[in-house]
Picture (tube, rainbow, N blue to C red):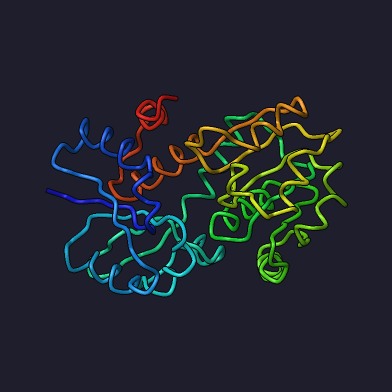
Length: 272
């Protein structure tokens, strides 16, 4: 049996990746299985060594390990090296190569949404591994201004110095919010409970904006979602992260197996 996996922290048990990958494997490689591994940050190097030791056929990487795992693989694709984050690991003989399919997955999501980012003003909330992929996508697609806001301004500064964009502190998002066409949430905050104490985000979701067309929250599976509520308030479209999950998963599958499958094969197990 060939085993594939996703590596994350304790939140990985809620991942929908096993559902979609195992559905595709059942049709094409019935001897394959996709599982989840919860790994403490302190044990990440050992986890990567375990991929080799146990002959894992391929791996995904999710929060909070996408940036840290860069230091433990044997090589990086050009895109993963540029972004500084890995979400897919591909064994190549005795080496493990880190790739990033989140950029392509987010591009696919924008195509699905029929959103033209060229010439648009965009606000990204967050500064982690997923933020890097989203920012790289939007810069590459010719967006006019891409603002990156986070509680820690220094993280935004480092990120934008490498990839482009305009760093701002979370408290100063009101200075740019009314000129934003697209808002992308890459933080783990999607509910009022998760936003408790974060006055910057609470101020954003209750604002009425004149240009907002689309909100994307890369999280999924929330019973209630403050970004969906904000989209409704502003008569804007809302998309969560399920389509992006399917799109990047499909790209990971292609890297592992050399086979291309229709996106519908990855959307169907997710109920899309």
